[in-house]
Amino acid sequence: MPRPEPHDGAGSPAMPDPDDARSPAAVPDPENAASHVHPGGPPVVHRLGPVTLTKLSVSAEDNNAYLVSVPGAQILVDAADDAPRLLELVAASGDPLTAVVTTHRHWDHHRALAAVVAATGAQVLAGAQDASELPVPADRLLVYGATVAVGDLTLDVVALRGHTPGSVALALTEPASAPNPGRVHLLTGDSLFPGGPGRTWSPADFTSLMDDLAERVFARFGDDTVVHPGHGDGTTIGAERPHLQQWRARGW
Ligand SMILES: [Zn+2]
Image 1 (cartoon, rainbow, N blue to C red):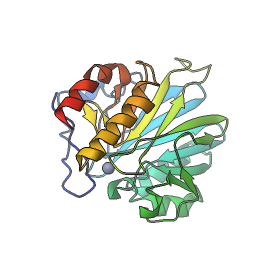
Image 2: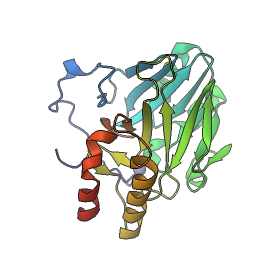
Image 3: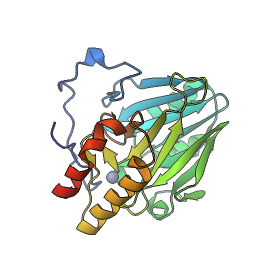
Image 4: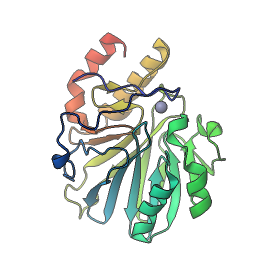
């Protein structure tokens, strides 16, 4: 499988072919780690006991927005574009949107941030080194080891430096009553995709990202951890782990 199209936020991202090898009929499998969605298409919904993780693709850049919902509260990860659709998704549960987390500074990940925040009053959260690049001021700066609460659920912030200085991933652990208690879902933004790390623009940034991925992701999370990236299909840590050295060697 070719390397996923890197997303540099600088324009001309490739439009994924919706007629790729994955059959559309196979799409809405909630236990499929790939959880394929396409721009304008229906969301994929993962039901994790009291927690619902909804993935929706928006815009020509195939940006993924993720809604984490528990009874009484929701957060959105990357208000990437198409505020009306995102707000429709938020409104479906009837629970308030307490925060929007932006995974990193690139333009394609926060085009609907201002509109979503204006409509919901949600707090704006972003990595400390990227927050000043967002179109609206951040209410809270996220650092490695911080947590983000969604009702009774606590997500762990995993800072990953390289694609941008302030990129953050969020780790959601399935609660006891979920199908796979303890299994982690990692929302990685543009820092980790099926087939490799996100794009970097210097050898130092590449090394930084690989070091953080090795120490903060692969050394910490088990093979059953599901990776939900900021564009395209998901993967698992187990599927990617055998390739870490290969990525280091090739330099991207
Ligand atoms: Zn990016």
